[in-house]
Amino acid sequence: MNYSAIWSIGLLAGLLIMPVQATSELDNIIDSKQLSQAQAQRTQKNIAELDEKTSETVAEYRALLRENAVLTTYTSQLEKQVAQQQLLLISLEKNMANVRETRMELTPLMQQMVQVLTLFVEQDIPFLWQERQLRLAELNRLLDNPNISVADKYRRILEAYQIETEYGDTIETWQAQLPLSDADKTVQLIRVGRVALYYLTPDRNHAGYWDNSSRTWLDLPATWLSKVKQAYEVADNKTVPTLLALPLLEAAHTVSATSQQEAL
Image 1: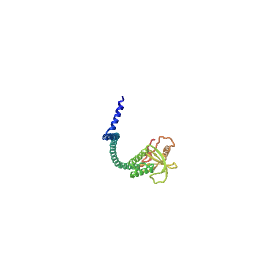
Image 2 (image 1 turned 120 degrees about the vertical axis):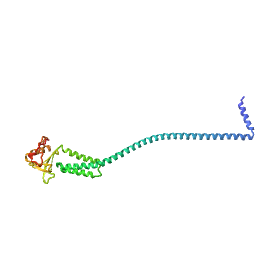
Image 3 (image 1 turned 180 degrees about the horizontal axis):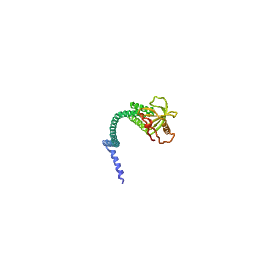
Image 4 (image 1 turned 135 degrees about the horizontal axis):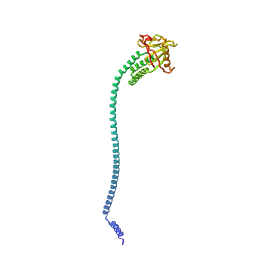
């Protein structure tokens, strides 16, 4: 026997014979159930949205944590760099103070060096007279020029000293008028180190020398003419360097009494 079918038919019959009031209560129950289901769906939707927003917030929070860690590391590195730069700035300020102090000390020293060099050239034998005077004048202009650094001024002064030092180790000849002389004549000048300065006339028939004690030019006797010519040949690279016998003379004595030999 099909009891299920009989139960369904009975239920249907019962519904058919159910009073109107019971039907209305059943509808209310159904509506309430549907309303609950709809509310549950909305609640589930809200929960899903909240869960999604929570996930986004957590992800954003984690990203902010990572960014904060990076910024903290970067800030720490910057603080170290700033500290190093501050130390460097302090060191630079100290160096600048030392430079200013050194500049204050170097300025009078350089002036004194130029003055000493000027006095030395004035008391030296007058070889390359104009060239050396121009160099000294240029050094004085450098000292007065505020646009030139102290280092450049000092370097130029040292170069001038080096040039003057090198004169003592060389021999040379050039054609010029007699320096520090009223005689208007062009001669061949021969410098032997910074020990002696001679001249030959253009016709090579007369010779003379500079006497530094009297600061004058004196004539040499004919006996020394060949020696001066030989010195000229060596200085002009017309012959190989050789041993030279040249007069070293004093104004207060005669050539024969005071002649000495200078070996080259």
